[in-house]
Image (spheres, helix red, strand yellow):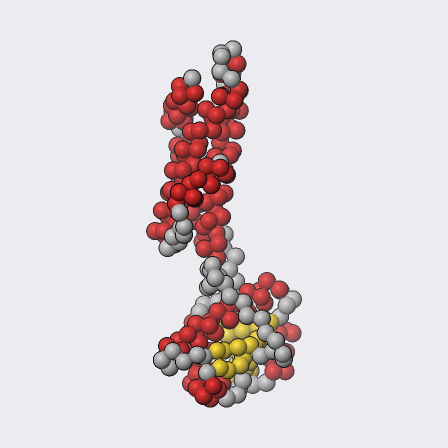
Length: 269
């Protein structure tokens, strides 16, 4: 009995002019458009720099920050009070102070200090901007370490007695698309496999065919399972499409067992 009901559902889906388009087009649109449109990355953080060293190393660091695309250099100040006036007037969001003897300390001691002062009026912009700077510092230290043959080099923020080092293991460069793609996959599964079966049952009632089913020996549980199982299969197909698009378009590969992913997808659906 269940087999014939499932066969009926697949035939109804195939005859529907709207559902197959939704099942195919919706994952493509969501996976290829939304990660670019629904992007909460902070771009063009206004940065004021105080370079007290004026060396080739500090100039290289400034150029690396400028080339990252996250910051807009609004001012190269000479003193901290001058840079603070730009913060107070809204011309800058973050102040970066490169201490004197920056290059000397890097070469001789393998470490140097910089100071980040973020405007916390916009806490999101200040916090993410500081994180972007920390990531750039880590990349810069890695480049110098490779050039020096593996000698340890650390570029640390200046704090009085203790420091907090943030490390983003999952998404080290805070690329928002890496956060969005898995979330959109779950959203698609919820919409296609959660809402569509419910709408399908409602459509049966609107077409008055549910009255015909009520007078048959078909039990309610079997009727609901017949509505859900086809969308389980569709959910697996959508998940495979989304994973393929994630690999091809964004270079995001699933880590771990694919069997576990599909198993928990089955439970979720």
